[in-house]
Length: 211
Image 1: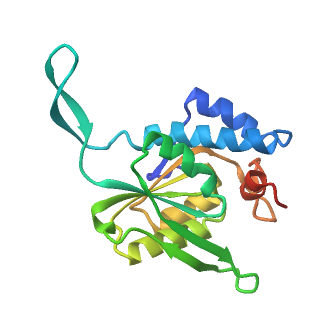
Image 2: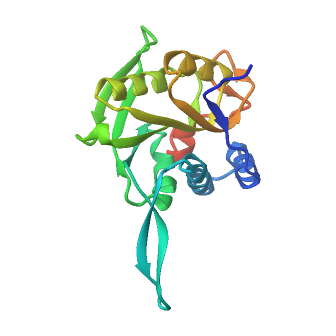
C-alpha cells in the first residue's frame, strides 16, 4: 500500500548502519552511536526543503554573496524516552535547534496513550517542529504527541523514526494526513506483542541498557 505522506530515506549509508542497529549482537555503545549517526543522516534529508536567503559576506579574497537558511527556527520534540536517542544526531546538523519533550505511556488497562510530561517553546507558531521516535509501531504515541502539539498551536510538524510498521503508518496517516512521516525503513508488520517485525527489538531498552 502506498502512503502519500510517507517518505522512506533509503540512502546506502543509512541502510548499512541500520543493519547493525537491527543486529541483536550489537553492543549498547555501538547501538547508540549508530542511532545517532542515522538520525544525523536522516536530518539531512528532512531539512532539504528549508528556505534560503542570500546574504553578503567577505571571504579572505573578496566580498561575495552566499546562502544561509532563513525563516522559522527548528524545535526537536523527542517522545520520551526512546526519542532521546536520536536528538543528538539531529543537533549535530542543526545545533541551534531548541528541544522540547513529550512523555507518553500506554495505560495497561485502557491501552490508550497517557501524557505525563509536555514542554515546548512558547512561540511555537513561528517554528518548525520535528517530532522524533525511533519506532512507529501501533502509532498510538506518535498520534497522541502530534495531537498535543497541534492543540498547543504548532502549525508545522514533521515526524521522523528509524523503523515503521504498516499498521503505525496507517494509523498516523489517518489521524494526521498533513504531517509527513520520514523513516529509514518500512518493515513487514506487527507481531502479537505489537513489536515491529523484523524490527530491532525495544529501542529504549537497547539505548539505555534496560529490560
